Length: 115
Length: 117
Image (cartoon, rainbow over all chains, first blue to last red; front, top):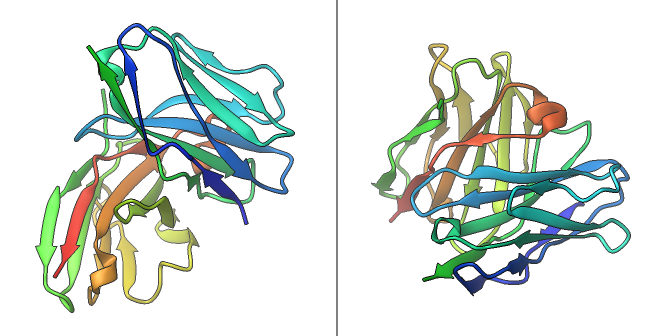
């Protein structure tokens, strides 16, 4: 069975600094998707960034980038130039590429950006 | 920007009572989901729904749970006889395509917190 592990329950970072959130996963599949979702306080979870396992190039979205290490089954999120609005819970998630509707989530990392 | 809305935001109920959590998915979406998160634990998949039937469910989704799309806009999760361990945040999500298709994106609501006493 697939599992997703986020080993950092809470983190903090100074505004304008860079922070990296860790995620590891376990699967026997070769084709799958990985995601980082962000949930600001009292708001919806929104997609931050996605990575397709068959793509070697790491995904980037503005200040957000990932370090995808397929062999190590690691998928970390780097937030550059942190902003106060980045304060949120961040969830790492996994989905097989086909055959299922469900996402497997980690327990989340609560990130606080300090002024 | 269209979004998924959920009601109620918080419900407190007595053990054994029936609860209905409501969701309004994004209007042109075709696939609907319920997830839950027990405090401090992982977000867990409960069920997915397409074309007026369950397409996939987890082992958590037992006979006490049911889902329905009664009127083409709402998507509901019913818990027939709540237990203490049903206390959790319940998230509704929708996607245009299957599992978000190759874009993989689910759109989530803010969640409904259920407290069972």
